[in-house]
Length: 178
Image 1 (cartoon, rainbow, N blue to C red):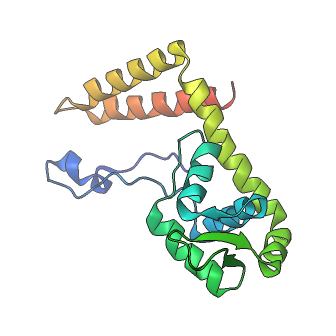
Image 2: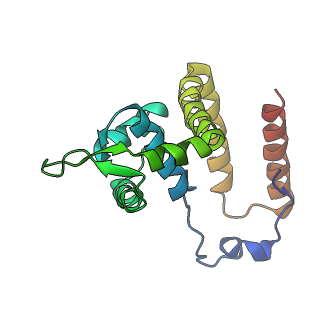
């Protein structure tokens, strides 16, 4: 569980009127090793090109996660160097890959991890469906608007800020345990 203790104003350079260097950063969805296992999983079903592997992962998450070519192609090369996969037809314009015996063994030894990855990506598909329920969409929109309106005010007192933080934590707890 995350620590929800309130941060001091020293932790928030923008609160003190400075420019601050905080940036939004999207969480990394999967590690390269996770991507390799997913590729082995899909190649165990059918030979495929890199683009087809990207689409397979995307379909599993109903479009919520799509690995970039910059993660897929270098990992295909690595799996090929590890002799876990091989090119189906070296003369083809686009390389299609298939699993080797070494790849099958690697996949078999990682069955629980692969199942966990598939469950994680599949849950994103469920998220998309539930998040698109009109009443849920409206409630999320209202919360974002209220939060943005309040946080856009220049002189929020520390007491008001703490009340807001507590309300958000309380809402998170209620949602988690609903």
